[in-house]
Length: 450
Ligand SMILES: Cc1ncc(COP(=O)(O)O)c(C=O)c1O
Image: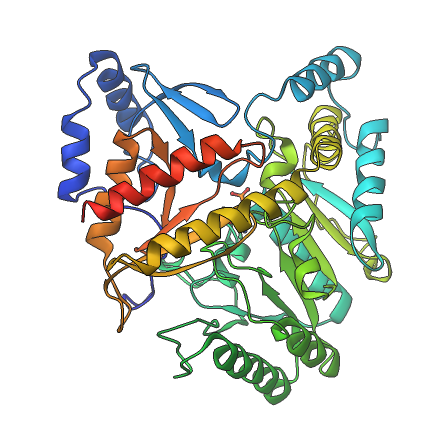
């Protein structure tokens, strides 16, 4: 792949800030474990070498092997209900005792109940479901289903997007880290357009609204020009985070309908309440043809993802489109059912909306007075703070973003950097207002230190 593709997330393994952090890891047991990790695992970007080793995860907190505690504002987007929710742990233990596995061609109560529950909760007539072990595999299933249903193979998705590490998912993704370094071609027919952006927009626009209109026009143009796309694949809100302008998805939905193209929404990190609605697409009032959820579905304990498709797309009964060993695992499906019940009964989507609005206001106010904050954006409890060298030109300051990241780690707060300069704050939805304030103070102080 060309070196011009964007590496859209992560802090580097080699920077001065990283070296300074590593030098402070003075605990010999941790150093030994990190060394064993580096020796034992195949190295890959964003995984090994690790920043430190973890010994405990509970609620919003993780604790490393040297006893340092961090609020986890990343959690790979699995920890909506906090780590180790007591009700979830009890439900998993009870399910293990009752029925621990369902071999292929046997079904079981929790798997069916989970499929029915997701079908009832999903918008429109999205109510035929398949489970996979991870999000990337669920994206593969969605791609296969779209091919089977349309008799077409092409997809249109966004440069810089991430949809998983499998060959199909990496093909529709647009990040260098997941596309380069693999000798040989990815999937044929996986075409891309530039995404919308509030600034530095590839369409040359100066506002989010104009950029979204230009992006939707480009999608419509490409779908019509080639006329044979199976699906548009996208996150309804990019988890970088980057919400669309109002009306964007309606335009894309109409373009898909005009050209016989399915719309696949990947809500793997953003779904299940994170953005303040149970499904992110509810913000835009647009129903996709296939919706994919994962990550937090297993409650931060077990791996499970789901493809939820329109009932009339159930057209591949003679083929194996998602033949996964743990397809109807009673324990992972019980975990998902219990997680959904916790999210709904504890009002966690509503909580994300309320706390997210509060945090966004506070960060915007701080940003207005800081020379380093370009933009604050997001939805619910998935918030991005863009770090810039120059507020007027919005030039990214990746070095400062990284210093802020390590200062926050020192201060007991872990999060992720997206697109090189966007502090991505995504806490569990069970966080208290006081804890949120504490974390925001840590971020603000780290930015203010320059
Ligand atoms: C938008 C999106 N899609 C797909 C995936 C892949 O999910 P998994 O890591 O479970 O395969 C991710 C993971 O980060 C994601 O953020």
